Image 1 (spheres, one colour):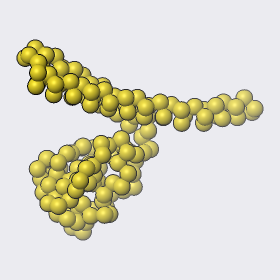
Image 2 (cartoon, helix red, strand yellow):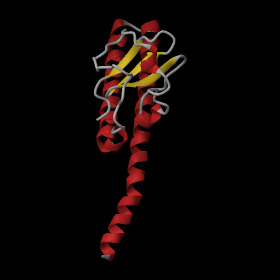
Image 3 (spheres, helix red, strand yellow):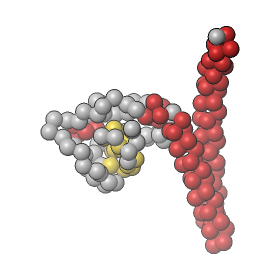
Image 4 (spheres, one colour):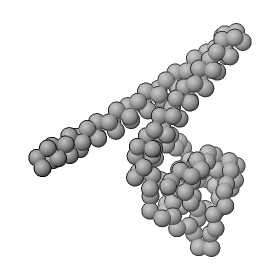
Length: 157
């Protein structure tokens, strides 16, 4: 019984350390992506076509690595992405939306806004843009006109 309790305590202390290591890895990957994008801009301004081609490849690889790390985070922290049941506005039926679609204001009101996007490792919403839950999807919406800017399908379980 004592060994079981010790093993449980060890697991409880290691889990937060693993989660923080993953978030640190995501942070470094985001930083690497920003650096690669900066180098691509410099290559486009001052470099040759070959430099631009190589930098585009580096940016693609950095994005892919960030995406894989985010998927690993999502896979290991499934409970974070298991939100309460979505209840849409009255008379609502789910229809997949795409970038450019215009939502009615009731869909991006305070009830559906994701207040803490970092919890889900979403990029920061700037200006009038807001992350909104729409069914099991997450949308980045311009709150002035309701236009969808980004769509993450099947985000929640």
